Length: 382
Image (cartoon, rainbow, N blue to C red; front, side, top):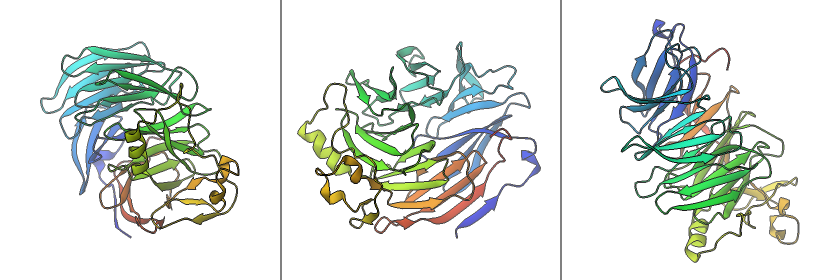
């Protein structure tokens, strides 16, 4: 077992955790609390800063721009001066507000990149440019209470994704190329999505929580589909590794699954110029569930149905891909995940916990706990 550490100290008395989020390269995470926010570095694990606004200065959402002093903040319901309907761009180095934006409804999420910052509302998403702080783009969406939205962080690509205007649909905007694409990703409403750092791939899940689909954002094709399980689940988080070779999924079932991705296949498809049909329906690379026993097909690959060799003869649900590596968390709470270095997965939970697990990239199987910290107690309402 790896390093274990628990939070202790009177400074945390009465302070409760409201939300957590990763920065863009997963080197840090931000904890929004009932009196401000704190930043923690992941390797080595330690608190790097905290900003306290007092007992009535709760922050509901906090996002950090890489490792800079620029933050996007939305207040908590208890905040008497800074409500959850206001975005505040905060420069912590100078301890000042850069700009504020007021909205008529509660902010559901905030996203930052070097060029843009995004405010997600219930049925509208606003994209602003950092260079002039002006509204650059606006998208209408279906009801989006979870604040689903993705923004690429690659220097030469600005890709934006969010729910579309119909159930299970994804809208993708390539700002630099001025291209718009709609993907019919799922039959059910979307519940979670994440994007590769360079914006080339998008992973999505629906409220059913059984399948995760990976799409090429340029042509809308579904390049792979993996199965979390057979029963319904609420997907809490999806993470893609920086090299886009691995995908991790957490849910309310308490088990985290890691899948191997066929990135080269997606790249070859893109080079061949294979485009999606109108509406970008999923293609034959996306397979539908299995109820038969599973076997390991080859080292370094996901587990597949024992009848997958009959693909094309039997229905698609006989060729599901199951997880390559797994572990079960000791507590069932809402976790968001990110990949660390050297084949590790990191989790931060709304119970104030941080986990780092390692996996065998060749043989898969049960993952090993490397590090655990309890950095802050959770809100009683979570």
